Amino acid sequence: MRALSRLLLSLSIALPALGLSPLATTTPAHASGNGLAHTPPMGWNSWDTFGCNASEQIVKDTADFMASSGMRDAGYQYLTIDDCWMRRSRDAGGNLVPDPQKYPDGLAALAAYVHGKGLKFGVYESPTYHTCQGFPGSLGREQQDARTFATWGVDFLKYDNCLASDPSQRVGDERLPLQTRDGRMRDALAATGRPIVFSLSLQPAAQGETPWVWGKGVANMWRIDGDRDASFAGLTRLIHADLDKSRYAGPGAWNDIDMLETGNYASASQNPKQRLTYDREKSELSAAAVLAAPLISGADLRTAAAAGSSGFPISQQDLSVYLNKEVIAVDQDSLGRQGTAVATANGLDVLRRPLAGGAVAVALFNETSAPATLSTTAAAVGLPVSKAGYALNDLWTHTSSVSADGTISATVPAGGTVLYRVTAHSGTTGSAR
Ligand code: GLA
Image 1 (tube, rainbow, N blue to C red):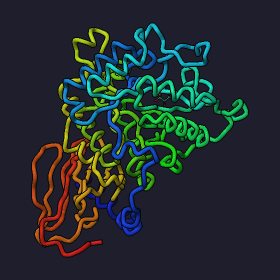
Image 2 (spheres, protein in one colour; image 1 turned 60 degrees about the vertical axis):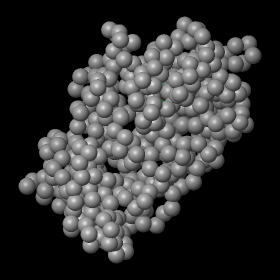
Image 3 (spheres, rainbow, N blue to C red; image 1 turned 60 degrees about the horizontal axis):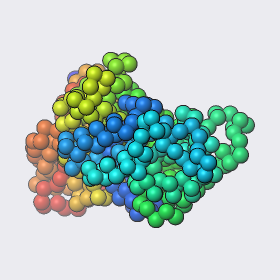
Image 4 (spheres, helix red, strand yellow; image 1 turned 30 degrees about the horizontal axis):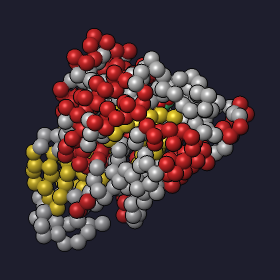
């Protein structure tokens, strides 16, 4: 009862705002110019589990797992090594050099291995003189570095921006606006002629940057806030930070809520309380899908055998979350419109995302620590009037039900999400909104 009254309160707060929803008036944003990432990129990144310790062997084992586990075939394609892959200094010709201890065969050979598995290969750099961990940055070397990446067979570039927080401490071109520095690499990548997805990583809140405002002219995706950890609080922070940025996303240009933490036991080893529960893991993928976020796992994706005693490979249950094809289909929907909030208050969120063909994805997300009943209506989520009612497909239980009057409701476990794909039955009589 308490939960119901909380929800009614939340709906009463949010419903008046519905008429102002950007969904009613905007058209999808257009691609950033390189023609890539028509849907949000999917894959894996080394940072959250391995930090500076990623290596050739880890990448190969991860590629093997992604190919054999079903992840690649579900769409997880890009496999990216983060900071610390290079030597502390460039060679005599000014070229970046992979750390020979970590990558003894070099990155061209590693990219070839990854490509041989039917996957794509990504690296990390930064529009500064040093990366976040103090390795050589690409500022002033954009064309040379972009050519190097293209020669190696790189398909994805994560481009960071760690700078002195006091602007007076910045030197040379580090004083230029981020958009200008990122734009140089965009142009350098384009000049190589190789398709390379361009992903901006930065700490917008700390740096006062708003990459979502200009991102679609520069990159295919951009972080909307600082690093998230594997905690549930980290997830909810990013979801809420993203809800008002929907209008900036569209095919080729996506808001990035940072890596997925489902199955990230490496952080759990530092703080067991941080690990997401199964319900929270399902909430993570559901929210990412409704928000049209890139699906980049930060977990240890090696098999138990490859990981050995030092690793924290994901469980079959974690894997089943990553492999939910119906939820992935929401994320990858061809209409490319990021979802918005119908109602969000007191830890109870009703989110919706319009899908190609007229269906709407509806997430009933319970952030609280007790079960709660969440409800909304077909009209509130933007579906047309349907005399024949609505079909509700539950994308986690894979069951369907009918709502005759348009009520969309479920009792949702603590931290959980019920995600429906809702369609109007035949006999529609025009828009309810
Ligand atoms: C920043 C980024 C992280 C990671 C590290 C690497 O903190 O936000 O995702 O790339 O740098 O140093």
